[in-house]
Length: 170
Image (tube, rainbow, N blue to C red):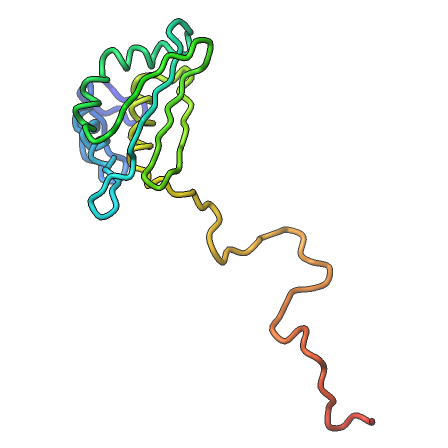
């Protein structure tokens, strides 16, 4: 087929990498996606201990999670055999997954109306986390504003007591 932008002929099912221009098939991009998602361990010990998948057995917002559990739960348990994966039916509630880490922290991700690929992505997200508190503010970051202070900018020695100059009268 012909690309509308460049008018070049490409095979169906291939993509070009924007940076290097190399051709990639869909299967190779899936492999790279899986390779990019690494396992998070500290000194060889996995940090995620438990996954709790909670869903409704008749709600429409849980349909993708129910399909995911029917199709992929067995392989997920084999792949992550060190995890305690539990599923719980909660009628009338939206689906979510809760990950419990070794340090006692829990992280919850909403799975409402998420498709199977996104569910797998969120499970990998929980698996690759360390369970630490997220620190969004960088240390030492300064506030940038369009309206500077009326009092003026701070400078070193601003609050020091003034010294008497040699030529001043006492």
